Length: 346
Ligand code: XUL
Ligand code: MN
Image 1 (cartoon, helix red, strand yellow):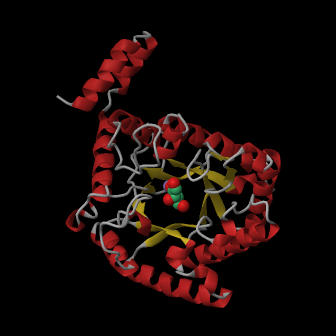
Image 2 (cartoon, rainbow, N blue to C red; image 1 turned 120 degrees about the vertical axis):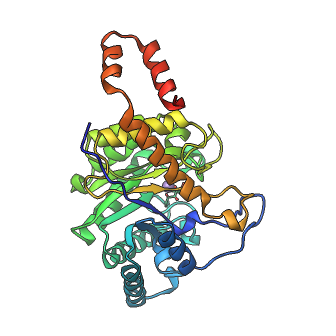
Image 3 (tube, helix red, strand yellow; image 1 turned 45 degrees about the vertical axis):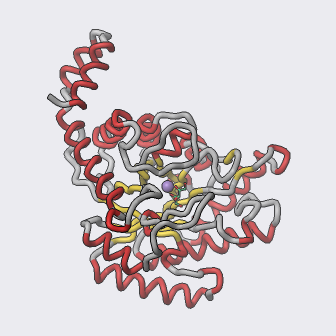
């Protein structure tokens, strides 16, 4: 077991969402960014995750100089509150320019837009004091196979990564894979794909991964195994813990909400491989249930952290020696029951 880690926690402003879904409007009134930052601080979280336009709203309408100016102002506010920026991610999926994808769009103008915007995102990250860029490749995929070439799309992704890496020699890029939604099929659906793509760029050391629980489940994979796979390569640079009830829309439920045993195994995987020892954060990409009242608006975040910490105790008190004996004896039936009893408590 690695040395006991003091974990650091974060979330993004989009995790205090207002309840809109594709079938209905918001159920809670919109709140300002300052209010969200104040909640994060009040609840004792350590850092905030940012999309580029969380940091600089209406980014496409602003000049490079204006973007830098606003990012510097934000940095001052974060420093004043003692809150770090964990990462910055280009939100490439909202613009009319990226209807057909960003880096893999069939339209060269759209591809250029995606790269220019990613370079601005890197500038913002630098100003906010983080070297971590997260890429959720939302529209880099197709609705139908005939629409794009898979091989060419992978080449375009590698070229885009190279341009980003060349723009700033310090940044690291964590790819956040997701197999579907909004696309029918995404080109980088799993951690294996993300790490294989890293091998096509000029500086593979600076391309790693972010694992989201729900995204692994949507790909039919086990989140704990995905975590260990990425950690075997030293490439798990960030994490979006949440939960997902099977093959449905991306639910972003509170951590442990659907499958407590899977959540336990995710925490155990992180703990035994020393996640956090290089400053990595535990991030919760969770949303309130649509029915949530304003007075309970932050509970999905505090509950996710509480569940994580309780499962951490379970991971730390799991009887490894007893488990080792059962493994040596190939008595997996008893190992199964031992794990269940441990989670149930006495
Ligand atoms: C999408 C998703 C995003 C990313 C950030 O499913 O998880 O919120 O985490 O761009
Ligand atoms: Mn996510």
